[in-house]
Structure formats: C-alpha cells, structure tokens
Length: 144
Image (cartoon, rainbow, N blue to C red):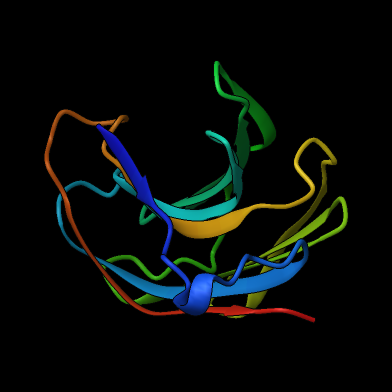
C-alpha cells in the first residue's frame, strides 16, 4: 500500500515553481523496509518521490501517471537514523534536485520532466506485507 498527500495552502496560494521542502519523520512501528518521504512537484497526478527507508536506503523516482521512472535508484546511505526521527529535505530548482537526510546532502539529480507543482508527504509498505505507523512533524516549504 502507498499513500501520499499535499497540503491546502491558506488564501488559495499556489506552490512556487522552485522551493525547498522539509519534514521530520519517525517510523513508530513496522518493518525497516517500509518507506516514508516527500512528494515533489505534484501536477495532475504526476510527481517526483523522494523516499527513504530505515534500513538506510533512499530513492528519487518519477510517477508519470502510468509508470515509475527511476531518477536515482535505491541507494544506501549512512545518513538515516534507524527508528529515530529523520529530517528529510529536498530542493527543487529548475531541473535540479538536491536531496538531504538529517541535513546531509545525499544526492544531486537532474530531471526536467516536471518543472512545477505541489509538495507533500508519502508512505509506502509496498516492499513488505506488514503494516507500519509513521509520525510526521514540522512540514515546511520555502521559496527562494
């Protein structure tokens, strides 16, 4: 199962094309392979997904409305703190993406398929048959 959401902005504001987004996440229960992350540039059902697992892996992929396209395949990092609060951040500027876990830059990527759209949150237990519980806090978006 996978789910995502994007916030309603006050006053009918639109998301800027370029932004920095961050959130603090903790996996409270469930397997290490359950994923949590950030939705980037969601537009009409298409979006980028920066996803992290407590087993120390992350990815950046694009859902084009019909299929997943890997931008950065599952990559191991020492930046993830298993079972603890992890701060995820991403900068989307033009065709450039910077991905951060606990304020450590873990990857820079390029993709110009989506140039604007909403930011949001994501969870997934697609890699496991077990349920998982996550807690998100301090979701923030900044525009340059």
